[in-house]
Amino acid sequence: MPTENTSGDRTVVADAPWTVPAVYTALPLLGAALGWGLTLVAEWITGLSWFPFQGLFELFLRLPDAVELLAGIALGLAVGVFLALWVHHEMLTVTVGRDGLRLKRGDFDEEVPRAEVASVFVEDKLLVVLGHRRQELAQVHFDLNRDRLGEALRRHGYGLLGTADPFGAQLRRWVPGADGLPRGADALLKARAHALEKSNEGDVRELRGELAALGVVVRDRDKKQYWRLADPA
Image: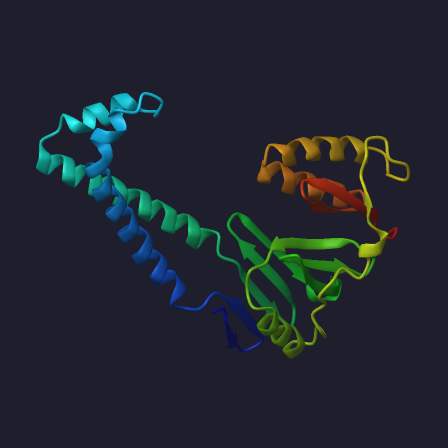
């Protein structure tokens, strides 16, 4: 269950404190168990001509039984540790303070000054912060407790947390050459559509930022892009 930690003029909303040690315990143990199981099925796998990495499995089977067992467990343990590190890295932390908001998940780390925030909402597992020109200031995948986030926002004077995009009705699906887009936005949306198809999250995020600089707000639904314009500066 997500939790919150209030200290002075800020409140941190994040996963429960036990989540991190649980991840670092469960995933390595699961990996080690799967590695042990690998020693039991390796010979069967070498009999499947379509299965990849046949050479590695054959090499694995040439090891002495004791070494084979230790190697399988060590490999599974290493994979489990790697997955635990990745899961921990990707956990969301929302820091709500009187001076602003900070959203951190993985490589995404965005701070938004309080004076620039007009509204905050969570819709379709997406946390979005909007500015006074209806522009998007920040966006991140959200999997924490909405009520706790709402309490933190109210505690620091941000008002209620919305459950839907207040300007969602203005979004329209992007098609190449769409009318009303500022100069250069259509090319960015084309590049972003390609990045969405390839699931290139880095390019998708970077191109969203470039579109925001042109005053274009974009939403993704089933790898389709929907857009609207922010108010002029």
